[in-house]
Image (cartoon, rainbow, N blue to C red; front, side, top):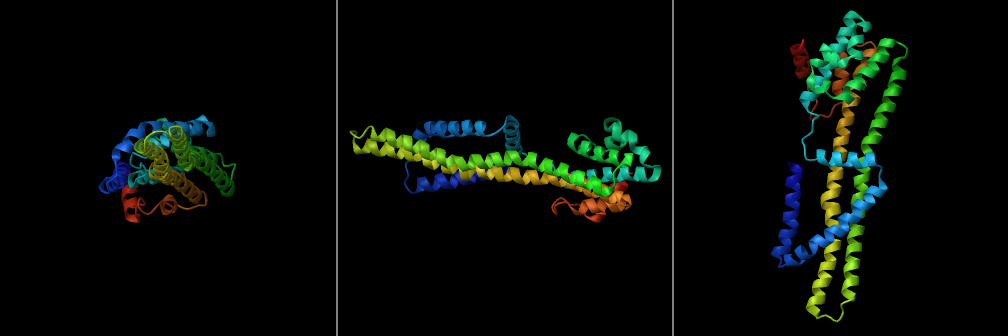
Length: 286
């Protein structure tokens, strides 16, 4: 919603002031379709040349996510922390082997079914169960598991950053494609030097629309979307960091109630539940 509102405000201010100052919007509208085809066509062709298909698909998915609200809410994190509390509490009371079936078959686990929002997220469940499995096996110590977690989170960060970087490169190239469209318009104008001044003026104005559109699309549309994608990427990384911190605290001997406090502390302040909220939620889920 805010993306659409921001776009409408930006366009209204740009074109509204232009019209109020006596600008002829007809010149822009006449040249708009041809300039858009030139700029966007060239930009998309370069985008496909510059990126692997997995990055192209991730970029399209990321841009689509910009028009949706964030799924990383306080209620989701309450579920995540309560899920970790339950499974760590079960392991503490009944032994690590008691959670083996939960780890091996999370789809059938009553613990994971109890928290459908987090339990239905394949990536989160896989991350939790992979490291719980290592804890059950007892072959790795906390430092080794932490190193492995860091490597996996870094890999996730690199994969998530690839579409963000691709969109940033696209934004950087759009002004250049706008210049190309403008140069072609000037070349076309120079081939019609025998025309009356009014006609030549209109042709030059249409050519300059290309430069205008390239800059507008770059800094008014694509770059802001890329910035929003980057913010959403950072949000997704926090979830894995929360899991890592909680599990490592448990491995170091802290009680489940204390371990989830470690995980709570790494969350962003706007979605971080306070101590009373987390305690109340955990007790309510017992």
